[in-house]
Amino acid sequence: MRATVSEIVFDCADPAALARFWAGLLGGEPVDRGPDWSYVDPPGFVRVAFQRVPEGKAVKNRLHLDLEGGDVETAAGRAAALGAVRAGGLVRDAYGAFQVMRDPEGNEFCFVSG
Image 1: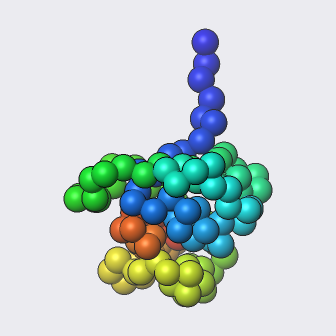
Image 2: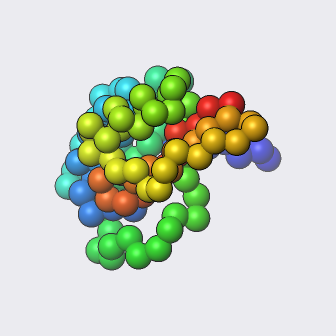
Image 3: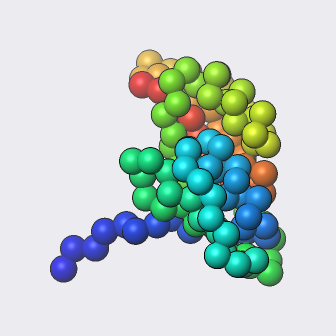
């Protein structure tokens, strides 16, 4: 048997707010199934879902999304306008560039090029 990824789920405090943030970033329409579960189906990607949990985020994510969005600086600025924050500065090397970001609840993700 070979498994396939059907969705990526983020634990969070406010599923509806995060679904709207990620829909703004990735496209798609946010869907609220109830106060404890929301999701978005971005075009060309698996469902990204958000489930309410009682505990807050305490440490760095063990898994994060790397997103390509054209120019890294432009993509980071657009994400910031939606409520994300930069975590450190833009990193450039011989292979490209990346910018670590945090969504409104602190979940890390990166914009990458190269």
